[in-house]
Length: 269
Image 1 (cartoon, rainbow, N blue to C red):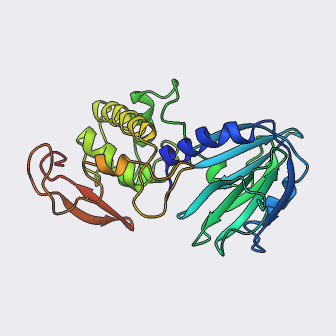
Image 2 (cartoon, helix red, strand yellow):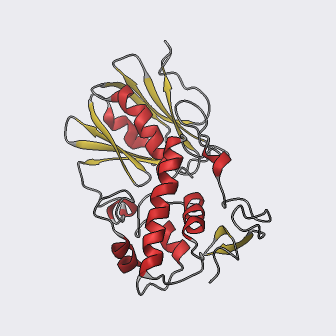
């Protein structure tokens, strides 16, 4: 599933293509998850932002187009003469702009979703409504991370994936950040120093992934092709291989239904 770095990469690439452009035609798959895409016809995009793993396109009538890519979602720019033509069977929504280009939402497994809401009203999107702070927020401190984890019964890896501790972190970057912070993913509580290390690690891991255009393992593509961060992963997906820090063998187990990789030496309990 695209996580914060992948969605932020797409936001940066897509923003200049759609800002101040009016949607002249819009269409979608018949699924209820994608039908709201059609409501945007006639509206002008005024800004494109990101909250966690969600893209938020602000419109000139004080509404917002919300796009969640799900597991296999991709946003593409089609600039051809037949720009409103379905590109393939996996196109789920499209918006033709008055600059002659079309934004296409392609989603093989149909786990993505689209919504149109009044600006800032996320009451019908609980994951977005209840989301924790952005990891790069200047208001987020190590003490705040510690406070948010204190007294929780869920494992720290699961807390990271919940989107309530911090926004935008999924399985890849949770494993990578916990490894860099030297925190065992099975812990149910962490100390203040560990919380600060975790926040620092998250910011480092996410920043580097954004600079590299995201992590392409299977389906993710940004507007320019594949990201390159997959070549720099030190923990995620490396179970059975040698730890790059201590030369121990990395282990893997399922924690709350998510496959998790860690180093038994660097991340001892």
